[in-house]
Length: 105
Image (cartoon, rainbow, N blue to C red):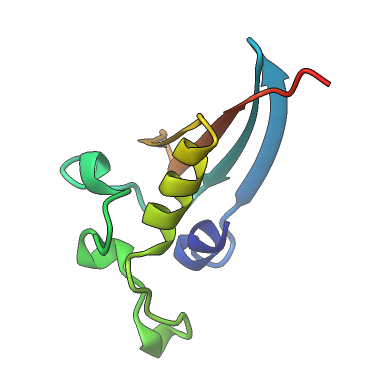
């Protein structure tokens, strides 16, 4: 969520949705900021990978610079719970989605 907020320009939108289907619970974060470069998508969850300059926040715009660890930590946590995390470009902006197995009780 913080990445979506940091990369969405003033007047843009960040939408968070959640649901349950096919034995899974999911949450999505859709931001209307810049798309993720096609060559960055396969690597976006790697440790310390920050992508292209357009996706890397800079301190002079008021957003603290990141270490490139946040998405890698999120991916590791989701996988440890037998889930999946994905990133995809949309017509405007991009979507991050987390899916986890739904509990039985």
